[in-house]
Length: 368
Ligand SMILES: *[C@@H]1O[C@H](CO)[C@@H](O)[C@H](O)[C@H]1NC(C)=O
Ligand SMILES: *[C@@H]1O[C@H](CO)[C@@H](O)[C@H](O)[C@H]1NC(C)=O
Ligand SMILES: *[C@@H]1O[C@H](CO)[C@@H](O)[C@H](O)[C@H]1NC(C)=O
Ligand SMILES: *[C@@H]1O[C@H](CO)[C@@H](O)[C@H](O)[C@H]1NC(C)=O
Ligand SMILES: *[C@@H]1O[C@H](CO)[C@@H](O)[C@H](O)[C@H]1NC(C)=O
Image 1 (tube, protein in one colour):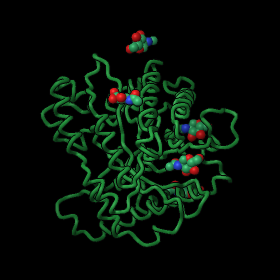
Image 2 (cartoon, rainbow, N blue to C red):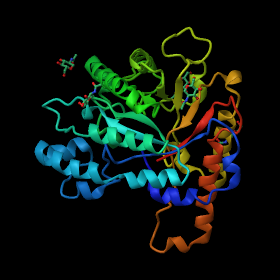
Image 3 (cartoon, rainbow, N blue to C red):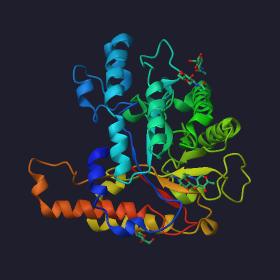
């Protein structure tokens, strides 16, 4: 969604993080970053790619260029935007994981869709680099056919048409099957720790005339979970589900393969994105932001056994707020109060979203 520090800027911050973040506890909390703007482009992340067009999403970009030129422009981007050196720097900074957003069109694109494929070899390369460096990967279906949220990050701005035609779910399930078959192979070891079925699905309100009701999302999650479990031959890949912004406690005791479950499914991860730049959170002042982080943290640090909340990753967060951005006017680096606030905001989040004891729902974080 939104983010403002590059992975490298984050890495330089992490080298100075306080000792208590490293509290002795195994398995290590997930400390990761999203490889945003790479295999799914977003205009605000790479304006240079979009400069010669009026496009606002990747669909529009490839529509403007045509498939041949889009393929050539995007291949240059995929081959240069992240390199092995970036993975080396991330590992050296103490990061142990990355989340890689992928669009369905990397695996399945139709002639009438302007999207181009060719991302897959780069995805494999990234997983291999992560493996060499002892890092883990969460692969995330960021764009589904029809769009699951109508936003640029899904590849296609507009209405949420994913739920309008069963073909869209079927195509998505085929992509999830492909990813599971590919990355459960022995050659990748246990590098891919999870596959996220669908990023940030935008459900309609709780009314009766919903276009994308929770029940339909849950049907999709059920199919996706069966697909991963039945194709993950080495049982390494956790089914990862986004909370759809309904809050983590809604998902207590959730098992996508058993609607009568009284405890969460095994090998299930919940992903909850925490932003202070959107909706009512954008109006919070600094004190309210910190209080809200504390509230989230207290919830995530409850024992799983007590709350039934599955292992939960904060798979996206950032330093953007409604009132300010860490990338401000020229010379803002000199503004010490501002720097102090961003440091507090950052450290509060990474401490708040990390477990400090076994058995808590919290399992760590990934910066966007
Ligand atoms: C669903 O999509 C498929 C493939 O694009 C199309 O053939 C079919 O007519 C659509 N069904 C409905 C009900 O719109
Ligand atoms: C998954 O899809 C990619 C891209 O089309 C293809 O290269 C790869 O062989 C597929 N993998 C599997 C296991 O089907
Ligand atoms: C919809 O209703 C459910 C059940 O009452 C509630 O948990 C959830 O937070 C609501 N979602 C939204 C977006 O209001
Ligand atoms: C994967 O699932 C296992 C078993 O339920 C759980 O202990 C672990 O925390 C999960 N790992 C991740 C990365 O979500
Ligand atoms: C934090 O939780 C308390 C207690 O439930 C609540 O009163 C307060 O409004 C919450 N603060 C924020 C900013 O969400």
